[in-house]
Length: 125
Length: 206
Image 1 (cartoon, helix red, strand yellow):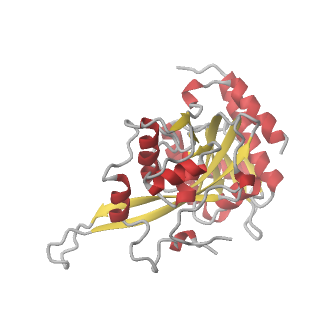
Image 2: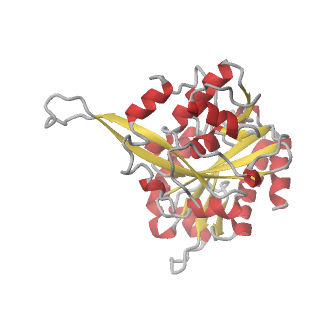
């Protein structure tokens, strides 16, 4: 059983969530909306299989995004903070390794059709 | 079945993968105090077992002088559970359960930006928590509905009494739910969607 509150516990030489480890993974960059306009629910799709020699985290994202997957889900499966995943996905976007399917912004509302589609879908649950 | 290993997890199981046709995603935020049943609600309607995303709050260790000049950073990990509902072949709805304290909301950049709306989950035994949340959502202009999670043994108040206690505008829907039940949680989301629908139909007074 995993306990989310204690996932970053002892037993590892390097604490999973330690600032040092996250710094190394991202090369010291922090997630910024300016550089990569990624939302928690932006769907990411890989354009190919991971290339040999890719950074392990990049390769892991490529593997799990063979089907569309949200930034939040990537973060959950990698056990990495969203801000770190944003940087990693941003790298892959820059290199053209993945595509981002932008979330539907509320600014586009009032979109009755969208809300009606959600109501329709919920009714079928 | 969760395994902890140094290998990165493979990602979603085949059953949890979205179809290739999924092109758009929307989100709804479930806000409430600790133990009010956010994850229960998310879990009861989600098509996947709720997942956890984390953000790390890093604070420079101020006032730590016993480390003799060594700059220390302390980090706190805050978790947010979320689930997913495929609305149709193209559209996916994500549900994020977040703690009521506003300081956590900033951890997940853009949590409320682009969200369709929010559900404030209320425990009648701890109304004061919701008071704050409602005020913050109003300030941010996030449309929301209030759902009262019915806990066994919790005092039962008429909804209008709760509305008054929460100082809730008459236009904001308030419903009772049992977050453990799928249909009940679904109905909460329906209430929010119908409310959003009515808002979208009403021309904005500017």
